[in-house]
Length: 258
Image 1 (cartoon, one colour):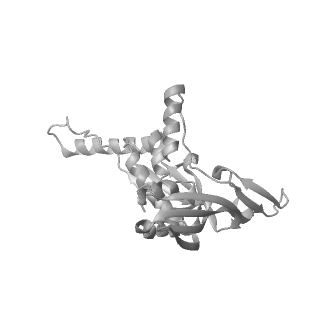
Image 2 (cartoon, one colour; image 1 turned 45 degrees about the horizontal axis):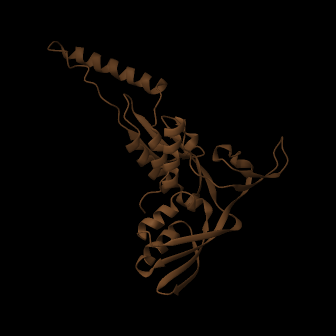
Image 3 (cartoon, one colour; image 1 turned 60 degrees about the horizontal axis):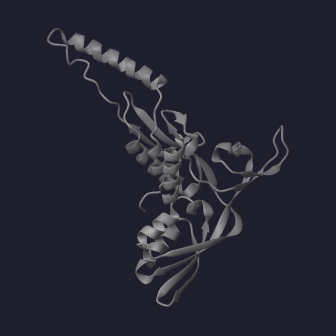
């Protein structure tokens, strides 16, 4: 994530580019069943936005790696928890010269986000990390979409394991709620798998006191103004566009301080 921010800043400053940051992804292998118009076939999925119809998918395989981590003993517990949270499988734990050596099998999808940043953070920079790919394995994977004001944001779509989808979606919705500026209408932020909403946050609307200059008179005058404002906000929500700042895309990709 650090290199991402540095490269983005340089491209913006030196070439005056308006960049769109997308979620990092890996290459998945899909086995598709036969349909009315196509035969059964295998395909590679590079972008979650290109996910085919889930009814045709018979199997999804994701790349796995074997990672070797060296760290001081005092940080071993936190690193073990980090690897377990990322669906890791422990193969070996030995000690070399007062330092622990961990060998874990990990899904590459769980590593490309912020695994290295988290590893350096919890080890105060004293841990080293090396890995190599060991092939693909079948997994219970689903596409999670992020919708802002009812519109899907393809840049934030990702493939996640079903067991962690709800927690990941809730975390992204909470971060986006803090990062997207408030508008004059309510903005729902939702994480969805297919047609099922698994997490939701709502950004409250900015309120304008339309009755500030309405002095005295019948209370019905104020009620009419408030009702008119309510209808206007409903139209704004239906046709209004939501501006998402660039920093929100980067911050939303972080998995949190687990």
